Every structure is written in structure tokens, then in C-alpha cells.
Image 1 (cartoon, helix red, strand yellow):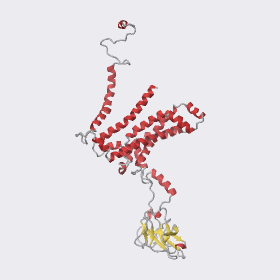
Image 2 (tube, helix red, strand yellow):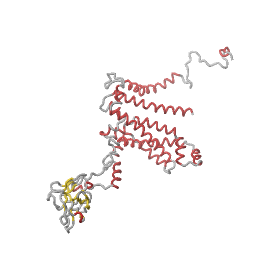
Image 3 (cartoon, helix red, strand yellow):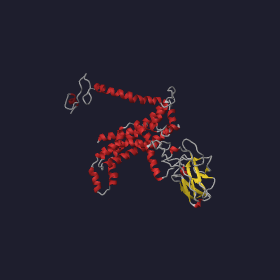
Image 4 (cartoon, rainbow, N blue to C red):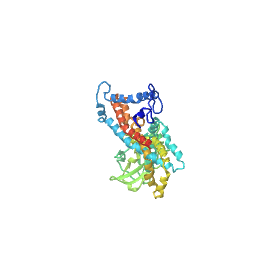
Length: 452
């Protein structure tokens, strides 16, 4: 076809809009109409996203007051100050540990619930923490990690297990009456008599330091042991409500200390031992004649109060555990949705070829779920980059510096008493730069999905 034919309006000629007509888009909509509809969204995007990002970058180059240009000094401070270095390190721990643990647990729950009869109910229970706000979850776990076993669930469980295998002391605050007792501190929390015990001469071992109404159980009145040429003695609380009586003597109404271990020691070696009965009395074999009496420190050791969950050492792992509790349901639901789309014929073919369930899971199920697992992992990485609520609420003030992360440091630098908006803006820019690669991975994956 010649050019003259095209110019003459032949079949191959491209349509040219008439002069004065408004150009339309591919969908047939006028361009100004499309711009008009997009304008509110563009204004909101500019006001809520573009402007804050631009202002943060500009503000990060100025000092705390915003009047002096300091260049990159704020960024240098982030990597030279101890508090911000701790925040960087803890943020790295969060990014490396929390998303991986949540994704693995979500994968395990999603696979196992397919074979459980009440799988739907189990998924509902696991997903329920997602309905709780970060604030409420932080308050819950602040109570769970309380040091006092009477208040903290975690330490209540730990102390129960500990006390099931290790005997706890009965009278942790008891001590000898220094004015009337010859028991002296002998190291390790124990007390040893300066004198020796003889058959037919009862040993009186008075203790103080406990209120009578705080004694465990229903204690009996103390009793003076009988003297039948045996080595005997009494351990009792040398105090009674209302006062009165003679110190170092068993007065009516004074309570016996049951279950106290008494050792007979000769030349630093224990030759015999006994435990006091309900009336506070004890009897030692004849080998104890001429020995010193010792009350071991196990009688007075402070009770085991569990683990210091929110101390400097365990505060970050403890908070990560609370995050896992919240987000495991999110990962499980997404992975379960991906698992529902897996071709079951591939799984059955692997089993027919002789693969066991572990091999099917590792070599078939996981590779097929790889796109979903990456989405969950990257989403959680972006999420933990800005973790703030849990740490601010759960970590007590003495341990908050040890649990610090970048998002919390941003708040503290800008609004938590620091008043340095330059450093706070620099931390915000760094968080943005850290999130951008993860966003790129997600966008690239979405683009590939569309091409399929």
C-alpha cells in the first residue's frame, strides 16, 4: 500500500481525532475526568506520605532545635551512641528471630490442623490473639511476666515445677536470738552452736524473725523434750503475740517450728542429723554426743521466686515470645490458604513413590508453599521494624534500655524527654531505608504473579 493511499484515507490509515476534540484515555475516559477523580487520592497521598517523608529527610539534617544545619551528624550519632546502638542490635535480633519463628509455627499449625478433627476450632483459638490490640497484649504479658509467683502466671508455673523436685525452705526469715542463743552464723546461711550437746541435757535452740501468725499450717505449742539419757532438743519460735515470757526458755503459748533440719557436727564433719517434729523436738543418735549442733542454711534459704523474665538478660526474648503469641495465627491463616491451593495429586504421587510424611513435607509441601512463606516472612519483617507498643508497655523502666529498638528510640529521642527531633527524624529515615528493600521484594513478587 502506497503512502498516497494512506493519506487518502485507505484501510491502513490511523484514525486522527478531529481538531478541537478532547483526547480520551485507553478506557475511553477523558483525561481531565481521570485526573479529577484521582486528585483527592493524590492530595491525601502527598499530605500523609510524600510530605512527611520529605520533611523527615530535611529535618534529619538539622540540630535538635532545627535552626542549625549539621549535615550527617545525626546519622553518625545513631551509630556511636550506646542507647541507639543497643536499639540497632535489638532491631536486628527482632528481624532475624521473630518473623522466622512466627512463620515456622504458622507452617506447622497449618499443616497439622489439616489432619486434626477439630482443626477449625484450633485455628480459631490460635487466631484469636490477633483480635487483641498491642496495648492489651502488652498489659496481659506484663502481668504474665510478673516476678511475684502469686501474680505472674509464668513464674507460678516455674516455681511449681521447681518446688516439685527441690525442697523449699520452711522458715526463710528465721534467725537465732543473738542475746540468748549460742547459735552463730557459720557461712552459707547456716548457724552452728558454740557449745556441744550431751546426753540427758536437752539443747534449746530458740529462733526469732517470724510473726507467730505467719507460720505455715497450724503449728503446735513447743514442748521441752524428755531426758531419758538421749540427745534431744527443741527448736521453737521464742516469741508470742502480746509479749511476755523469758527469752531463751519455752514459755506457754510459744509455737514449735516443725520440719527444721538439725545436724550434729564433729571436726567439721556431719555425724548425725534429725528433723524436728510437730512439737519442735528432735532426737539424735548416740554418735552426736559431744558434737556441735548446726542448723543448715537450707532451713532459712529464701524461697525460689522463679525467673526474672523482664530482667536485662531475658527481656527481649520474653517480649518476642509475646509477639509470637499474637502473630502465629496470622501466619497460620495465610499459609493454610496457600496450602488449600496445593495440588493433592503431587502429594499422593510422592507417597506412591515411597516418600514418607517428613520427606513429602520437606521436599514437596514446603517448596510449593515457598511464595506464600516469603510473603508472610517479608510482611512480618516489615512489621517488626516498627515494633513499639509491646516493648514500651511490657519492659519495666529499669530494663527498657536493654529492650530498646529503633522505633522506641525514635519516640524517646523526639518525645520521651530527649527533645532531639533531628536524631528522631534520622532514625525514621533509617527505618524507611530498611523497609524499602522488603517492599521491593513484595512488589517484584506481585509483578511476577500478574505475569503468570
